[in-house]
Structures are given as structure tokens and as C-alpha cells.
Length: 293
Ligand code: PEP
Ligand code: MN
Image (cartoon, rainbow, N blue to C red; front, side, top):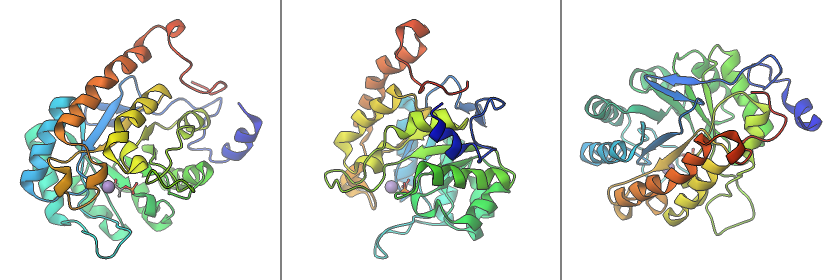
């Protein structure tokens, strides 16, 4: 391992990849994240109505997603933007799980919301704006559900792992890291997908790593290309925004895929996923050299 990385990350002893650690597999119902499977989480940015969510749940399940995403509590950059349906949204998510069997990932924005969201969610999402909310992280450490920890949009990987360590220290080892793009000087995309973050994180940490190409791109047409990149660099899964009518979405419509686009993206990923299953001699080195398996 690059000695610089080693020195930087090994102090986060519960989440660092060391000679003693083995790769974490986060289990959610019958799904394993960080194991053999590439796990796709998909759904709308926000739960807007029962009809919108149930139709989306059915479509993404049919296309191969295993986990349904959808925000009931929405952290928005603008105070004028749609803030989510709150507990009503959580109830709709629960109904979608009953009808489709999909597991649910949804965001808890504050410490006070944690117990309520944990009653409905299978995975607790921490948004980019909350990555350094330490009282939220500590509450999530005690919530009894896996945590999907999104990288802060201006956070280094060291800071991301520091937040993961806080959740683990508070008693919850089931953390999934998510690269969702960071702020740079580039303006043609909403954020800049730091694709190198995936092999770096998989080298310095034993936690699963997924990619959110939707918030990274900010435009739907780039999402399939970034998803392919995520497969190629060894990510354990994706978090993708899908909406029945992206042009009518109350939030993040520009970066959402419609059902057909999502299906096409899933089909297009197949050959890339097949390479990962191929014997080692046929496939590119997926994990940066020097990591412990
Ligand atoms: C989201 O997943 O809809 C979201 C708000 O993401 P982020 O926190 O990465 O902006
Ligand atoms: Mn969104």
C-alpha cells in the first residue's frame, strides 16, 4: 500500500483495511452489499405520491434493482425547493416494499428523525450535507440499521472515513460508503465524479463502496457512462435516480432517468459486469494494488 495512504487512514481502525481486517459485507434482508453481487439502488430523488413511487418501484425491480431509494425528508440547497412528504413519504415507501419486496434506502436528516426513519427504512442514508453532522452519525451508530454514508461535496476521503469511523465507534459496523461527486471548478457537470475515490477507498478501507452517478452528473444523459465507469473501477453498486416523468419531477428531474432509460442502462452494464465474473487472468485489475482482501 502507498505509505502515505497507510499513515493517513490506518488510524481509523474500525474501518481501515489492515492486515487483520477482512472485507465487510453489509447484509440487508437477503441482499449482500460488498460481496459478489453488484447491487443497484434506484428510485426517485423524492417520494412525491403513492402512484409515482409504486410505479417506479415496480419498474426498477423489473429492470434488476434490489433496493428502492426515495427521500421523504429532503435536504435542499434552496429553502424554496420541495422539502419532502415526511412521515407520509415513509409510509408510501413501506407500502412499496410490501408490494415489490425491494429493500428501502431513505435519508435521515437529523438526530431527531433517526428512530422514526429506522422504523421504515432498511438502510439509513446520510446526505452529502450531513456527512459531518456528528450527532446524527452517533445516533445512526445506535440505530440498528446499515448506514449509507455519502461523501460530503467538499470532503476529502480522509474526512469521509473519519465519519464512517464515528458511526462504527458508536456501535454500528454496517457502513456503506458512497462517492456522489465533489465540487470542483468544472461547471459542465453538477459535481465532478471522483472515480479514483472508488479504488482508493477499496484499498484503504474494508467497507463496501457504491457510486451515485446521478448527483455526480446532474444530467441524465451522462448517468449510464458514469455507471459503466463505476463497474469498471470495482464499485459494489450504484444509487441511481429514476422517475416516471423526469420533466415533471419535484426535485432533480434533470438528472433522473425515465423507466426506459434505466432499463437500457441496466442492459448496457451486463457485459461490464460479466468481465468482473470472469477468471482473474481475463479481467482488469479492479482493486488498486496493495489492498488486503
Ligand atoms: C439524494 O440522494 O437525493 C441527495 C440529496 O443526495 P446528496 O446528499 O448526495 O446531494
Ligand atoms: Mn436527489
